[in-house]
Image 1: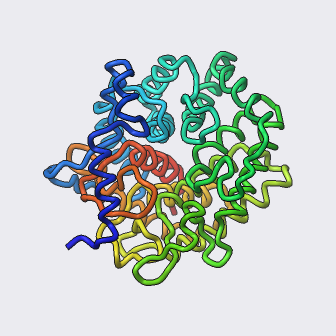
Image 2: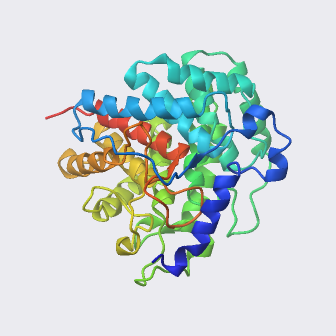
Length: 389
């Protein structure tokens, strides 16, 4: 019996199966044929058997799991480019996988997407979701310093910085917590590659505005958006979405990666990162993963792989960068990685990924979506880099 509170999420998921990610059906009809076929994912009734891969964190085992998932996903998205945040997250994971697996195919696919869109961001200029693909453009720019790869982005961001902040205190420019993965890393990295500190100043100001609105100092987690301040789980706890908070931790990693080590603002982001790590560690499930609703695990039958993958990614990065205790967090990462690998099917499908949505919900074990694959590949790249003892 499915709890009644999951009905809206299930309806949303069913609609998502029939439409493109973040694109209306009317708009979809106006797109080129290849882009109309771009699907974020699906949840077949019979996904086949699980792969039974080794859960060990030995680099060879980690890379085997990564390659299996990456190859399955690559085959499914061939010739279907997208600027949507769902695919932008995947492209970042593919770039990380290309480096870790020393396989240029994944990077070449992302480069083809960038060329297809002529290195432009999505159509909604100020919307964080449509800026997310900029992380991949900047990754590729670092490999080849062609000014055209960031020219459109710079022009767009220069114009955005001239716009006044929102006067609605509950709807700032980044008004939902997952936006902190989509946009801030683009601004921080653009500042790093150009040497223009204005982008970093803008990012820092808007990040603080969002944190002041959505951060819970009591639970040390982020509300999805202001509408969730007075919403509760069945057990009376506040609703904290696993994927949203996973996106925040992933975004913190990306910001800290490009924020200068001697920048005085760095302490703020490190503090948020460490506080979230403490909270997330305490909420890890017996299977090594986290449920869609972080504070009411018993009410969610399946783990949520996309949020869990970002938690593993972030904590593995924290260990490698010596900002988290190896003794405390390596067991969490090891347990989490084993849990993630247990949801890989024989053909390479990565399951238990909640579909596109905005809050915890129900989904089938077979549910697989591109953003979850991207998060998994990012996690694998960090896990593979950890020194074993």
